[in-house]
Image (cartoon, rainbow, N blue to C red; front, side, top):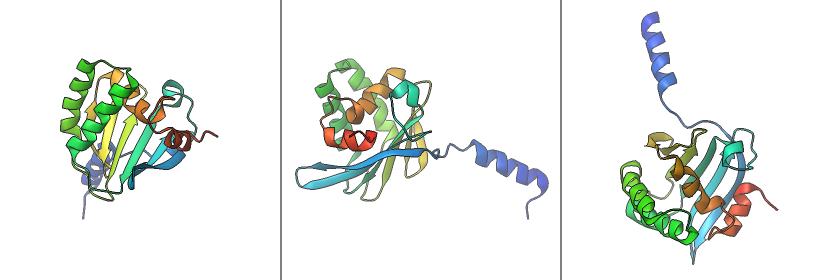
Length: 166
């Protein structure tokens, strides 16, 4: 049995762990590539509405994978999307890709990868609900979330589903 001091310490430690916050769903959808469903996506904010990154932060994007995908495949696809959008330099993309090598891992069917855009512009990553780290570059957040949320995304149907737009 825990003594009162031990219980207090356990409560403090539990409070200090960075669990994924409970946010209200804005919208949900699925991403398919050719014949394969790759993942289900969910966008969430504090009030369940999305206006833009500044007004809606914190913003959570959670992906639940329907197939096994290697970390490198996910990073390569992310860089390809940044190139298509053209809102970041090749140098930034390579720096971010190198940092993602330390934050992401291979995913198996059923795994959840989540990104939380914080009010200060940093992005916290979670794998199956456990924090894997923070990308500190404040330019990264918008560039990353734009893959799904920018009007020029390569997945406009998913964007509409995520942002609950008509």
